Structures are given as C-alpha cells and as structure tokens.
Amino acid sequence: MGITFDRKTATRGQLRVLNLVTGLPPIVGAGALVIVLDARTWLDVLVMCTGLAAAVITFERWAAHDLFRVALPCLAVTVVVWPVGALWLHLPSAYYGLCVVGAHIVPRVPRYRRAAAVALVGYVAAVGGLHLALFGGELPGALVDYVMLPTGVTAVVAGFMFPNKRFYDVVQELEESREREAELAVARERVRFAGDLHDIQGHTLHVVKLKTALAQRLVRTDPARAEEELREIHALVSDTITQTKELAYAQRRLNLTAELENAKNLFEAAGIRVEVTREGDETGARVLLGQVLRETTTNILRHAQATEVRITLTGSGITIVNDGVRDDAPPELRGLSALRQRVVDDGGELTAERRDGRFITAAGWEGTR
Image (spheres, rainbow, N blue to C red):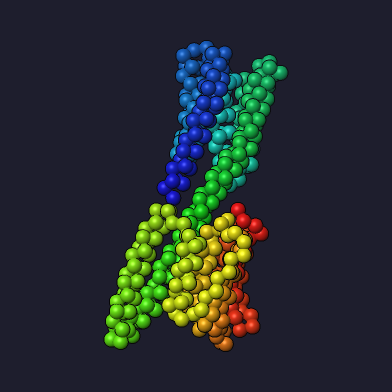
C-alpha cells in the first residue's frame, strides 16, 4: 500500500507540474495583456491585478487538487472585481478573473453543475447588460465589449473545462484501477506463498507424525530402528526449516527427481509398494509437477489405506494411481483444490477422481516448455 500510495502521489505530482507548465503561462500572459490594453490608471491596474491574482491562485490550487480551500474567497473577489471594473472604472476586460475562476470551480461543484455554469455565464452577461443600461455608449461596440465578448469567452472557457474534468476523472479511475490490481497481485502472492508453505510444512508434519508413532512402537522392541527413525525426523525437520527459509527469500524451486525419491521412500516406509514408470523425457516438466506429487503423496498417506501406488511420468505430465480408497465419501482434498487453479493458470489441467476402487490424480500440459 505504501508503494501504491507513493506511485499515486508521484502521478499527481507529475500532472500538477504539467498543468502548471502548460496552463499557468497562458493565464498570466492573457491577464497581463488585457491589463496593458484596458488599464488607464493605477487604480485600474490594481483592480484588474486583483482579479488576475485570484485567477492564478485558483489555477494553482486546482492543479494541486486543493481547489475548494480557496474557491469561495477567489470567487468572491472576482465576483466583485467584474462589476467594479465594468460599472465604475469602465473596464470591459475586468471579467477575465471571474472567467478563469468560475470555469475551474463550476465543473467541480458536487451537484447542479449545469445550473452553476448557466448562473456564471448569466451573471457575466447581466453585469455587462447593466453597464449598457446605465451608460449606453455606442451600442454595437459597447454590446460587443461588455456583453457578447465577456459572455461568449466565459461560456467557451467553462464549457472547455467540463471535458477537461472528465479527462482527469478518467486518469483517477485508471490510477484507482492500478491500485486495485496491485492489491490483487499482493493477495494472489500471499495465497501462493500460503500454498507453498502448506506444501512444505503440512507434508513434513504429517510424515513426522507417522515416523514419531513408529518410533514409539519400536523404542522397546527395536531401539536401533527407533533411533534411526528419530534421526530421520531430525533431518526432515532440518530440511523443512531450510526450505521454509528458501521460500521466504523466494529461492525455493522444487526438484521433481528429489520429490520422486522422497515419495518412494515414504511409501516404502509405510509398507506401500511403489511402481515408477518414465514415458519419455520429463526434463521439461514444470515445477508444479513436483508440487502435485508432494501433495498427492501426503493425501495418500493421510486419507487412503493404500497397498500399491503407480507413478507415471511423461514429458507433459504426471499420473499417480493408488488403491485403498475408502468406501465412504471422498475426502476434501483442499491442497489439490488450491493447486488446481495454479496448474490451470500455468496452462495445464489437474484432475483427481475415484474410479474402480482406485484414486487417480493427474496433471498434464499440452506440451513441455
């Protein structure tokens, strides 16, 4: 989450810099131009600079996603500057600050945006019309300077900011989508880690349980054999600790040959006959095959009363068949269920079914990699 937050902050920072670089110079330049063209006295300059300052502050806070902290003060300033400029100082360009401020605020209003846009344009037109009503002047020129031009420019700028807001909404939605994808990736990795940890420790703990029970039975009748079983338990636990450390540091990679040898030893120790058949070269077999073999070995030792197990390895998969299937309901093989999705995600297929008194577990791919 910290990385996602940093990425989101960095993206917003980049957008803010881009907006300031591309938007601030035109706003300041156009504002300075209208001041130079319209202002005749220092009072004119002061009034119009006040409106321009409000416009610059509004734009800067808009770029920083902090608009509403300054929205009302800046809007109030420009709402006053326009009638002061038009009705008292006769400055037809005094609407400029209100045009910029209003155009940035209106699309961000939570509700009634269209009504707010109409009100903004109507206010600009009303002040200009009031100037005509009070002072008259050359009608065509005054109408253009105080009504048509201010109203038209304000309407165009405000209208442009509506799709601009939609653009930034899309950017935000994409950013949120990236956050959700990152969270899902983290969740998937945690599930994968939990599955691998189950493969290592669940398998080992079950074998330790079996060997401990065997050592307890042999401690009086065959102390040497019991001691050997305890040494194997110690070695098994030590190997599990090593594998857990490798898993924590993302260094673990199951060795299919080692898993096959381990499965044979476990089955033979439990008095189960094992037959291994290699059909083709399995050097291209996936790491998941080792996990399937390990999980199936644990399931057979835990849930079946097997006397015989057949393991068939091919260049594209593995099949494990065991007898000793109980007549009651089949066990809930949660480990294989979790592993099945990983096999499917890797382009393969994992099946586990009971057929003719035997249980068949098979994992295969169309071809090897």
